[in-house]
Amino acid sequence: MYNKKVLQHFKSPHNFGKIKDPDGIGKVGNIICGDVMWIYIKIGNNKKGEKIIKDIKFETYGCVAALASSSIVTDLAKGKTIKQALKINQEEMIKSLGGLPPIKTHCSILSVDALLEAIYNYLIEDKKIISEELKKHHKRIEREEKIIEEKYKEWTQIEEKIHDSKK
Image 1: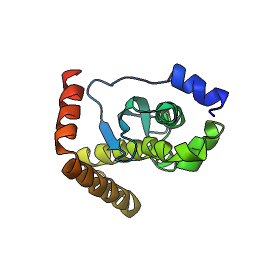
Image 2: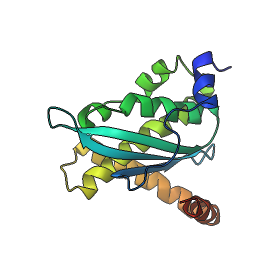
Image 3: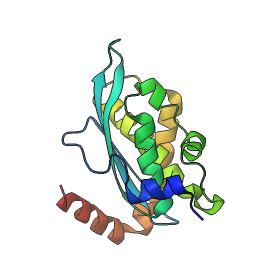
């Protein structure tokens, strides 16, 4: 079902964990499969003075596809400028993994969403200009999160407590 590269990223994920004092945090979940992920970014400057993702880590509670896609997205984003990282999409991520079973592509969307949310969070906190496209993406994530919270209020409170207790 899964190819060798997907299984390698699942068994030995790259960039797994948290960043102390991250510059941006993206948290997303999927109501259908129950996957939840956080992406943490630390921003620095490259030699040209452009803002880059200097470090990136993730925590994912989910299936093989969710973990593998989180791992590959962090690989794709690390060292990229903010502008370059904003262009990472589901197709690029799936291609970098060598493909995913069609029934598991919905799991992979979360990793790109979490990356974009982490960048959005950084831009908001740093009072930077945010593109209309990124604002629209963030609004969609917010709407989905409210639906999840309303339907699964008790579960999301427990999940947040568990996550917070690991800090």
